[in-house]
Length: 147
Image (cartoon, rainbow, N blue to C red; front, side):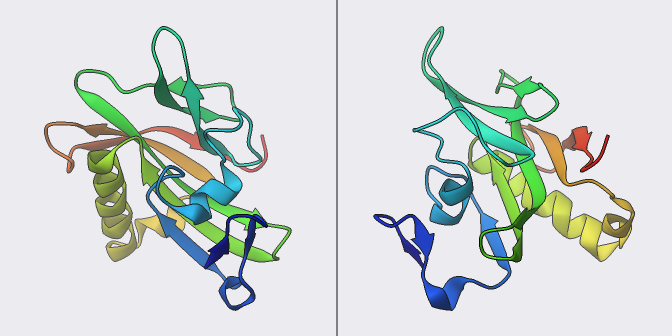
């Protein structure tokens, strides 16, 4: 699917893309968010490695917000991104850890089933996911493509 040395998708994988799980384990996410190389991204929301006070990963957004896991909640990102290089839409879904990713996928599935996803006019949604119960999900930020 992905040529790591060339940092490009193989020709047969250049259509619409759905990537589940974050840049540490998924090359599709990593292509748009090289988390261990840079704290910047062209995405609406991305994962970044923060070294102080100890190494940890946070979700950062173009609005200047930062989300860090705490004792009760982790965070997840759902976003639709237009990849100009490959001319395709990309749906990216990932959490800071597995429970966040699962919560985000369940939240998205419920929104698709009840069709309320059609009312979401945002490029990215940041979700707070309860560590104790992945079904307890709250949208904490919605990022529009235009202010």
